[in-house]
Length: 322
Image (cartoon, rainbow, N blue to C red; front, side):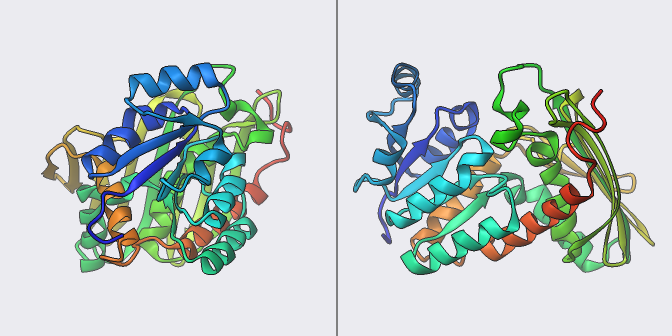
């Protein structure tokens, strides 16, 4: 595949794909050749808006000989079966986070990847933003001394009652959708697996978490994470060390806006950039064997294990409905 324009098939007529992944694929030189959608009428409208020539079933897309990479933007519970199907059909897979709903599920993907010789990656686009890469570098260099505390939050008002993220059976909930971001960054910065000290969660009357607060420990670093579907939009992340503080006020969603990394009172400004396009470009280079995959499935398993630990410590669904 070296030197070729890689061909993509999309599973799901998702808003995130329309707003972010489709432009990113095209900006990175990829071609979108097929869309998988359960609703043919909706799929045709979506395809026409986004200049995609072919609409088919999910299965037809993953088995299409003209598709090199499958992007999975379906509800969370559908990630594992369709990622397995795509790998079995000889496709590379870029799948929205969370990649799976449990660490043991990632083991199935690791086995399938080994058998079929294809790559799979969890689509955490924020990791590729230059401000996040700079944050990692400053922590590694000891710019604030030994990190002692991390704080991260991400939330918004999910007002559509029909959104699949309100369905427990579909892998819904605020922790899976937005809590995964600060947990992932804490894990990446510390290089440690979390110990869960305490968790408080609030649930809907259908047993889906809409707000979660967790106190964690990553090695010697304590961490506090908040996420929600029931608060106004907010996001932030900071690392406190013995010699200073690093903070990013827009760490997770910052497409095409200036991003500021604060080191105490000093601001380091990053010009607007599309982190989705940077992620897609990297994945395509890895598919072409031009560079190693930065976030292989072993990393995805560690992320799923971290999420499992927080979920295990949460109250039973419905116990704290508000």
